[in-house]
Image 1: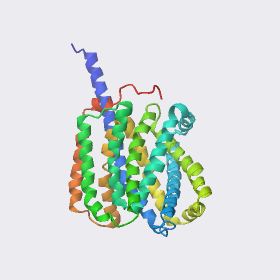
Image 2: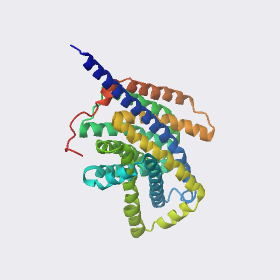
Image 3: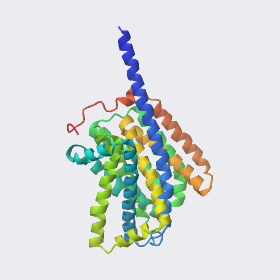
Image 4: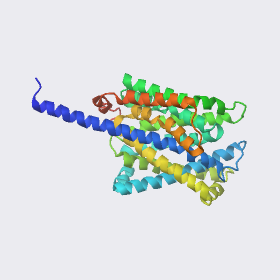
Length: 358
């Protein structure tokens, strides 16, 4: 028999779960919007000195330049995140989370390895060697990677409805980018395989990062967590990778840094890319903490639609007919996922996590 108190409690629980679901999908949509915007400045940076002057056949030179570019990008993102947390009054929480390495921030360190030297670096490589179209489509599989890792590692549930919605969104992204992809790839280019390898790195890296970061967000604030993640990326590049490149190779790391920092157009594109990526990442981590890895990734794949919209606005070229097909599929997949019950989304991870407490 249902009592008035139990009925009121059930309604309150439903409102709570519905609010978490609604805000989770709102943040996931912001993730998609800002991620789509990132491809414009991210690609434009390759057309500015000192990067534009490096020929495609100078493979090591371009890889070194990508490392420098990714580190400067990470520093700029960190600066924007520091401003964000200062406005929220969370800088103290950031410091307390960073020093708790054994239980919390170690996961953000691992996430930074997956997302920085692997995913962002790989995406920049894909842009320059295989084109921005391939760089975008190759990342569409990241929700699958993240969902599989989350399901196997800490048993995050993937319901049939969530899996169907995610599959529809991925299909929509492929419909948008597929025709352009086949026209953009050139199998005769001897270094195209580097771009394809970068695309695989981006999909695997971002998928793994989402699953690893969610492990830490069980016990930490996502706003603080994302700043910890970029703190470690800045350190990995600035204290380890770039110094090793400068010491043990003939890579002109110092010259590339100087040329980039003294060329205003390059700095402008980096600032734009860092702004979109900083708050894209903030939205990603917030959404993941609310609706889980797989659903955040599925909605995040709407970046394919937004990327085409931004490219069309930037180049003043209308999208092709297949854009409408892809748009319908992506939006349809999102509604499939959103139509899942609020209670189902909110209890995704009400299970014991292997390995004990974070």
